[in-house]
Each structure stands twice: as C-alpha cells, then as structure tokens.
Length: 180
Length: 91
Image 1 (spheres, rainbow over the protein chains, first blue to last red):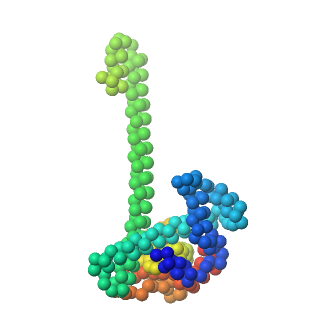
Image 2 (image 1 turned 90 degrees about the vertical axis):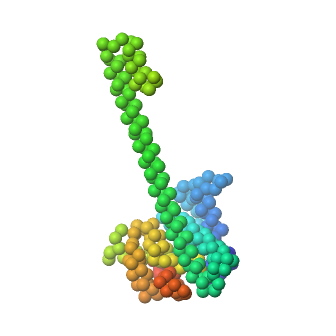
Image 3 (image 1 turned 60 degrees about the horizontal axis):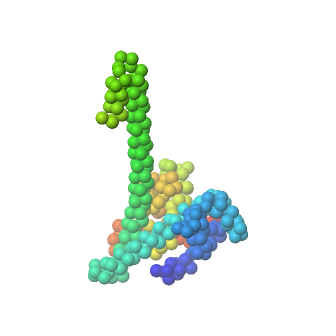
C-alpha cells in the first residue's frame, strides 16, 4: 500500500506556494500531533502551533495552518477509505466474486466512493446527534429549573398562609417537595 | 451558497481543491465531491456538480476516470493543469 502511495506522490507536481503541504509527510504528521495533541501530549492552539513552526523556520499564517489541517485530515480519511476499498476488493477476489483486472478496478472505484460517502454521512450523523444530545440536556435543565421555581412559589404560599397550623404547613411542604 | 454566476468560480475552485486532496488511485464521483464541497459552503445537486466537472474537464483542469465496466459510473481526478491552477491562485 505504502509503495503505491509513494509512487503516486512522486508523480505529483508539488505546490510551489504551499509551504505546509510540501513538507515531508512525517513533518506534516508531527504538526497535526502538536496541534491536536496525542495520548501523551496536550493539544496546542493555532497561535502556539504557529510559534512552534516559526522556531523551526516555517513561517505561515493562521488561515493557511487551518486550511492545512483540514486538507491533511481529509487526505488521511481518503487514504483510509482507499485501504478499506482495497481490502474489500481483496476479500471479493478471494471469494471468487471478482475475477478480472477490470472488475477489480471497477469494484475498487465503487467501494472507495461508498466508503467516503459513508464516512461523511457518519460524521454528519455524529454532529447531529451531538447537537441533539446537547439540546436534550438543555431541555432537561430547563424543566428542572421550572420545577424548582414552581415548588418555591408553592412553598412560599404555604409559608405565608396564616390560616394553616405549623403541622399542616409542614405536611403540605413535604407533599410539595415529594417527600410523602 | 447558491451555485450561480458570482459563486461559480468559487465552486469550481472548491471542486479542484477536493480533487487535489484525493491522492489515492481512485477517482471521486460527483455525489462524493458534492458532499465534500459542503465544507466550502456549497450544497450542490449532483447535476450541478456534473456540469461543472464537465466544464473543468473541458478546460483540462479535471479528468474523468475511464469507464471500465459500468458505463454509468463516473469518477473524476485532478490533472496537472488543475494543480497548476490551484498553485497559480494560491489555493
């Protein structure tokens, strides 16, 4: 797999102006790890990452760094999707479902595009679910707050009621608080 | 962002940028490209994406991957001229 990527990259005309995109892949990965953090290192802000790069004689802008990060992640996703597609093709070949080189190419194309679509859809789903979960939590907090306000108001009414005995008041308050 | 005349060049650039990101052996379909272009603020119909890809192919900035078995399956890749375009525009 790596051999294929290296060979393909060698054919590519490098960007003249894209400083970060022209760096060796190891350095690009190091930048991503510095910015995003790893299991053993903490993440850094874009400003901190820019400063870190400058110390390495790499001068770039906030926008370029952000663009690079997006580009790197997408490229990485696509490489993973390619690997997945090739694995699926291999499994199909082993099962005898794919026999010719042409079928292999066509299936690879289809599997790759399905995988990229699925990944995108999954990300969107996670995002939607995250928003929905946050909204549900907010709704719950709001309901709790309203319940508390309601209990406070009802308790205040009982406390200010001059016709009730202290025992009656206590019993009523316990009822309002759900203790009986 | 609607894909009309003031935005069409931006949409073309977004398509080329996504195509450039793909350094795999495979091409990307119009549907996949349309999905990726959401990150650039576009939500194109598949037909709109196809129209622009055909335009870019006509300008030699993108190329259609040769159809092998399924003639209806269309996938696209960037060309050297497409990379040059991005380079010239600092994209």
